Amino acid sequence: MVTSGPGSIQPQVLLLASRYDITCDYVVSQLRRRSVRYFRLNSEDLSDSTVELDPIQRRLEIRRKADNYVVTPDCLRSVLFRRPVFLHAYGDDDRLPAERFSRIQWAAFMRNLMLFCEARWINDPVATYRAEQKAVQLSVAAKVGFAVPETRVTNAPHPYLLRDGSHHVAIKGLDTVLLHADGEEIFGFTTFERSAALEPHAWCSAPATIQTALTNKLDIRVTVVEAQVFAASITANGQPIAGDWRTQKNDRRFSKYSLPEEIASHCRRLVELLGLRFGGIDLALQNGEYYFLEINPTGEWAWLVDAAGLPIDAAIADALAREDSTSVC
Amino acid sequence: MTNKHPLLERAHKYPRREVDLAPAGCLYDDVVGAWRVIETGELWVETPHRVGPHTKKKDIETGEDQKGE
Image: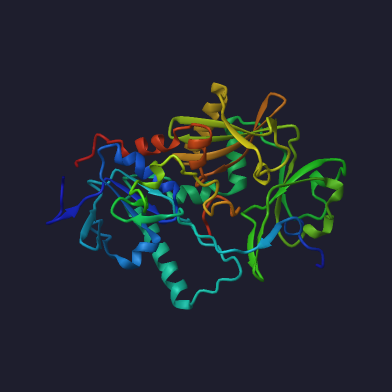
């Protein structure tokens, strides 16, 4: 054990998470099977810890109860970043100003750990921020060679894709549609409509993403961890799901799926070009063509470990634990 | 502008509920960094009954990026 002072532990892997983020438990379980020193730093636990960050020497010391953790670039191999890259205002934040202040400052503290830039970040928050932009994703996906549905991001009263009223279109937010108001939560799934059903002038107040809808498609969730590609098809009652598969809660089935090598290669290249090491990619197979829908740089994956038998937890742990030739401890 | 934006018009609305995000019957072990079943002492994630989340707020669809924590 390499130490930095009596009783201190130097983590090789840092997990930045929330204690309620049980997906992180999957990674912890896998890391315990590898001989690697990890430390999970949860946002809820920060106030009960004492932290001291020296940005010049790049040394972070965390004291929690009887334990002392020292993070240095020499020892740190990797960081699993499962925190927000920015905070949303949902409309009914009833926290006290002091509590809001504290959350904002701790969130910034987590982001400032980017100064450990030599570590392998899964994912780098800067890359995540860029990769979350839907238009950027679609642009890079097309460049990689994916088929991409015809798309407009617009608030035009008569968007190009709505001019022909017989079109089936998919409409979705440019960002997550999630609001809180009057004790209710409001969440927007991707909606499929005939364009004639949409009121043209209602679009003006905010841009939206409008795409040619893919009907009779099979949804495929692809999870990329560095060079490894895991895919699962999503069906209900043995059939593909029309519309947004998240709205289908019953009899949903996730099955291991074998992607053609060319498509797997597109997935790897997309993740790489976006500067990511991990990505949850939504594809749709229609008439033999694999269409790119979106990539989630912080996408969920834990349910696929159990539901489809995909060892994504092991792949992430391997990527985090891997020792580079430059590692000194 | 009187018309409601189509994305809001079609959004799902449901009563906001406080959800206990901790796995049932577990306590967080901050040394290990994982939830432990109180009754057996096992790590919850290493039990056969674990169910990984589809989203970070369990079954409440909030998108996948934890932007609002």
